Amino acid sequence: MSQIDLAWGAGPGTQYETLAARFRPVFQRIAEGAIQREIDRDLPHAAIAWLKESGFGALRIPREEGGHGATLPELFNLMIELSEADSNITQALRGHFGFAEDIVNKPQGAWRKRWTERLSRGEIAGNAWTEIGDAKIEGFSTRVSEKDGGLVLNGAKYYTTGSLFADWIDVGATGIDGQGVGLAVRRHAGGVVIVDDWDGFGQTLTASGTTTFKDVSVDPEDVVFDEDKFRYSAAFYQLVHLATLAGIGRALTNDVAKAVSERRRIYTNAAGPRSSQDPQVLQVVGRIRSAAYASSAIVLQAAQSLERAFQAHLAGDAEAEEAANAVAELETSQALVVVSSLILEASTIVFDALGASATKKPSALDRHWRNARTLSSHNPRIYKDRIIGDFAVNGTPPPYQWRIGLNVG
Image (cartoon, rainbow, N blue to C red):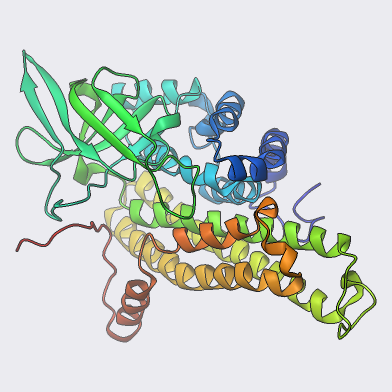
């Protein structure tokens, strides 16, 4: 059934339904096991393998290079649909799609060809950029150095989301000359150890734990300068969170609608003979669905701004690209404060439409709030409000990149 028939609105572009039809059977298969995986804390190795086999990881790779040639709005709409099935999996693939976006922003050449071929074969990348503890804002403790005539990587990362499921790990490090670099190492290379020690109360199945590197061999051809990463990357990574939140909103809608339709017990002071006929209960369900609809629409609007930034980059117009990047960052920041609020509220009021039995663990309804709250905590919303306000009042452009760590200055 199309998005239009489900009243989620038309997909982005006339080809979207054809593209989505390839992956919806996989999404459905993923959705069928989502609650049980949550209850059992069963990591989604099989679900991610199904997506790899379907070619989902090559969505952004152009058709002539072996992929599907999806636009950014198409990519983010598919992320919404995947998140409706299981938001853990979208989060686990966030690093991969950021890595893939950097590939399609690179010029044609040996580096790009090597990676488009890998992704078109179904290989995916995880993420290893964040350091905790005494990590400093100015640079990475994880370093590339020379040893026995080659390059090796040493260090430790946390929040290495998705790396446990990946073929490659995208790592941020300090290069041999002290500059920031990004590099990729094989997930199963000697010296790579990944531990699923993520203990957050939300997004529990994303394997967002610790990865350590001890004298891991580095191919010099897989090292790129950090500043050469695609310019709208901060907006891109943030919008993945927002697409995930929009998908959570849709999953909330499905779960509460099903629970209300099946509910037999009522209260003596209810406004109808059954919950499915109680106008106050239906009002809550409608409010949740409207939040999911609005969130999806906002995500797609912001995705258009990223597409414009991408197209400006391809056109080679530096001035237009600079302006488009700023707008993409602003639009995504504006979207963040609204979408996160909508879905956090929706995931709370869902319990107003049901009885106390809805809090029982087998229903796993609490996962929606836990996941939404966790996603909404990654990038503090209060800073986005200030950045937007500073632009509105003073015309101050937004910061493109930012890090977290100790300020030693």
